Image (cartoon, rainbow, N blue to C red; front, side):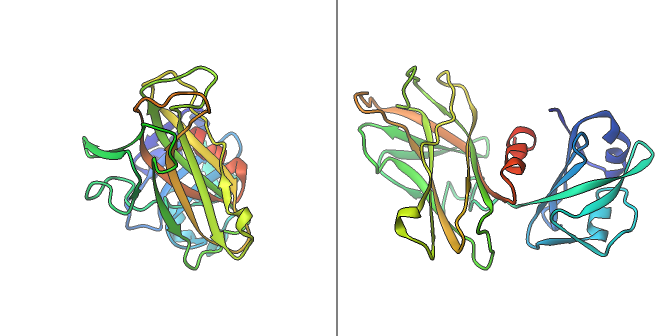
Length: 268
C-alpha cells in the first residue's frame, strides 16, 4: 500500500481520492504529529501526543471537515471531504513514540547497555550493536518505559525497529536481531514476560529490514522493559557477529490490526 507524504492539508484533500493511504506530518508543538488516511477502509490514523481525545479545530488543520462535534474520541467518525464529496471516516488513535532518546541525543543516553554492546552515531542516527561472543544474557541493550498515569491495560504494544546482522544462518535464530519485553504491574510474576520468541528477521545478512513484535498488555500494567538482543540456538558457535538496530519505536494501539497497519503503511 503506497503512502504519499504531503505538507499541506489542501493538497491532502485534493489527492485523497487517488491513493489508498496517505501520510502527513506536522510540527511537534501540535497535539497531532502524524495523520494517515486509509481511503480504502474509510479510516484516519492519528497519533496523539498527550490526550485521549482531539478537538474539532485541531483536526480541521489537517482535513476539510464538516462540523459534527466539538471533540472526538478513538472510534468516533468524522465527515471528511473526498473527491468533492463528504463521507464518514473512522478515527483510529495511537500513542506517540514512547521510547526515550530514540534519535541518539548525547550518544544513546537513557539506554542501559549490557556486556558486548556498542552504540555509534552515523549521519545523526544512532546505530546500536549487540555483539555475540558467547551465549550470554548480558548481551543486550534496553530501557524501561513508565506509563505514568496512562491506562494501557488490554491495549496492544508495538515494539519495532530497523535491524540487520552481519551473518545469517539458515534455519537458525543465532545472530538474528531479537526483540524482547517484560511488563510490570499488579499481576503475577510469571506473567511478566510478554514479548519473546520474537524473531521476524528474514535475511539475508547485512540487509536492513523491519523487526517488530505486537503484544497485548495486561490489566494494571504500569511500565515495560524493552530490549534489543541477539538470538542464539543451542549448538551454534557464537563468533563475535554484530546485530545492529536503529529507529526504535514503542507505540500503543487499541487493536492488533491497527498496529499491523502502522507497521505496513506508516512506519519508516
